[in-house]
Length: 125
Image (cartoon, rainbow, N blue to C red; front, side):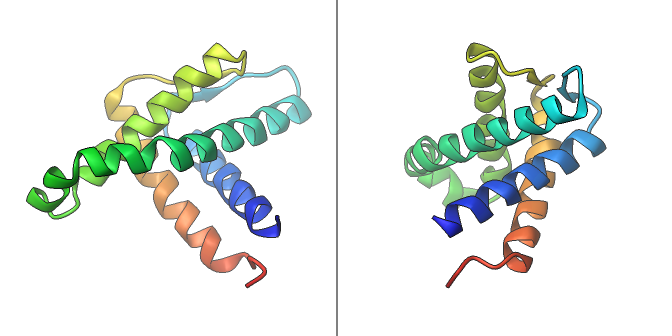
């Protein structure tokens, strides 16, 4: 359970950095507390998408992973971010990613920041 909380907080932090750096990724809300809760809910949704959908997509695109020496990961991460944006719109969260190029840059930033936070934060192991 502690590992799940740490990974969710790392995803929330990575999403916050992407929101701050990439102009095409937006999170709207009326107050700071509302934005924080929305960010945590989007991080949970992003973690769920990465847990359920990403392994299937990676398996289906395995030849492309081999052919591009793993660079297709940028595209897969962008697609996961776009899927998270679409799902958040469906459940009423105010998180939006405008375009594929924005999603690629946001996915890259989220991957790097999430990795760094997972290295720094304790996970109970």
